[in-house]
Image (tube, rainbow, N blue to C red; front, side):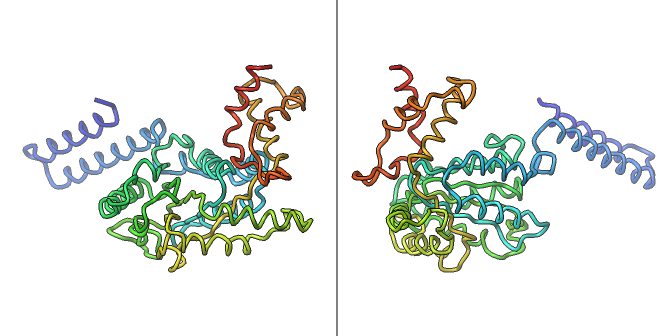
Length: 342
C-alpha cells in the first residue's frame, strides 16, 4: 500500500482509538482532534510536494513563456496566438464568470493539436501527462450515431469527474466534427454562468474543441485574400469567426449542429487556423529535422533537403500549389522517407 494511503489511515486509527480511550476529557479530545488535523494537513503538504495535486505548485501558467513558445513554434497563425493568449490571461483571474471554451477550426495539420499541447505543457508541470489534462477523442469515445443517449451520459460523467477532481482541469475534445449530433449539448450547464452545480464550480475549467469544420471556408477566404494581393496577416479574427460560426451551426457533421452552445453564445471564441503555405511547411520541416536530431542546428540543414521533403506533400490549388492539404501533419513520415533515400 502506498504511503499516501497508509499515512491517513494510521492517523484515522489513532484518532478513533484516542477519543474512545477511557478517562479522556473533552479538552483532551479537542487537543487530540487538533493534533490529528495538523498531522493530516502536514501530510497533504508533503504529499503534494511529490505527487501531482490541483494547486499552484503543479498548475501555473507563465504567460511570457507561453507567448514566446507560441510565437516561435506556431507558424502562419496570427489569428491564433494573440486570441488564445488573451483568453487564457483573462480566464486566469481569481473568479472567471464561466468556463473558457475555445473552438479551434481548420484543415488537418494546421496546428490545433499542437497549440493544445503547448498550452498543456505551459500550464501543467506534467503537461499532457497530467491527470488534470483530459484528451477526449470523439471517434474513439463516441463512434456510433445510434447511441446518442448513452454518449450524453458518458460525456457528462467524464466532465463531472474531471472537474470534481480539479476545478482547473483542461478538457480537450478532438475531432468534434465526428461527434454524433446532440451529444455535446449535454455539457451545456457546465459551460454556462452558474456559480456551482451539485456543489462543484465549473467556471475555472478550460475546454478546447478541435474540429475540421469550416476548414474549406477558411481556406477559400484565405485564398481570396491571396488572389487580391492582400497579406494573410491582414485577415481579422472577427470576419473569420463569422466564416466559422454558420457552418458549425448548420452542417450536421460539425458536432455542433443546431447546438445550444452556439445559439446561447457559450463558446468564448472561434479560433481559425489558416491553411499553411509552403514557407510555413518548410519551417515545420526544419523543426522536425532538429527534433529527430538529424542535424544539430538550423544552419546545418541544407535548403535542398528541406525542399525535397516539402515537395513530397500535396498542395492546393493544383495550378499554384499554395496551401499544403495536410499542413505539417505528415512531415515526420516524409522526413523518414526522404532521409532514408539520401
